[in-house]
Length: 125
Image (cartoon, rainbow, N blue to C red; front, side, top):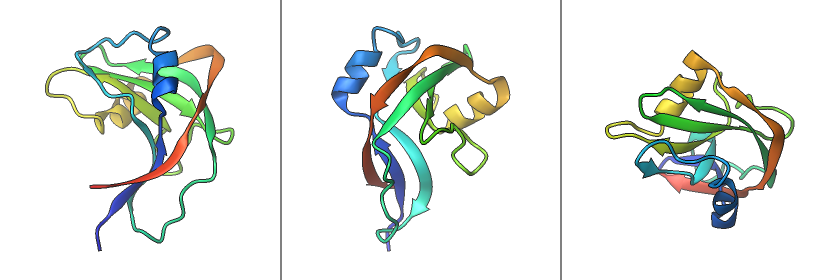
């Protein structure tokens, strides 16, 4: 059985709305999803939430920029990390590093929060 990532896709129109507010700092624009869980299977239900709020931004100054997202009233993903959108990456950096950057350096609050639409989804890895 193949394993998957369960979470939400960020619709293109939502990304386009956020881009003027959060200029990408690094050369690779990611901006495609918010992860709920890694290693799920086809029987894992998709999440029910269809909206979130961008409440913060993190940047390590070395190639990882991410937006922190609140879903159902929390940024806590339940595994010790935060809901987030990897926004941009520098050369040699990977999206999974966003969790480490947020944990190590924290994040700056976005005020007021920005509501976004999200589409429940599953991806294979």
